Length: 301
Image: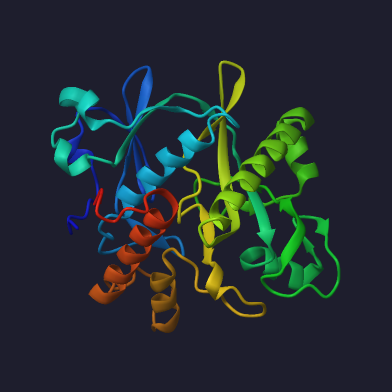
């Protein structure tokens, strides 16, 4: 397994940089956009050092895999993921192999579409305070990590700076219109149900996930990433319990380390210890194999 970590691709791409997010960088190809997925990792709204080797590789490959698996359910923005097709746009194809996705340009809908199958995380905190999640009144006496009888749709208004804002479906309707809001709700629930069943066959619980959608030629399409450790909460079936903090299959080692450290969350944190970085890489690679590639002899890393 290679240990090369990609913190940025700016020096590796011959195209104008459109946007630099916490993990992804978007480059203008004219008709299309090139997305490069780096190994940067963030927590508590800070991008941390050092980057986590193979994190971007896993995120991009998993997204590409899921976009292909769900294309009959929902049109998406993918054109291709082949770095060789980019010619001299990419200076070092070996470094960016499996990290690129060329996509169609779509107008982003500024709503994060979240589906929850279990009451945990921010949903659990809302419920403890109000008995509701995003304005949905829930039965009294629910327990942390309990499955909902039916998954619930809990959107958030996207903010490019700071945290996204949890909103009700009614507020979403006011923002984007009732017809579009209901379409996004329906598609999000369908996608979640598909992936939840798929994951269950592989011993994984898909606790919750989020989607982004865009408008292309008047049609709603799926964009960004789907069913990755950065956009979904995966639990190993054997670790599922009620009333506890379940160790999720993502960057939990980073969150746990920072939470137990003396960091004040208001300043740039010290570099992550090597053992935390290595364990985080191991988890990202493990979820890839469990979901998309069970043959560890055919390693893409």
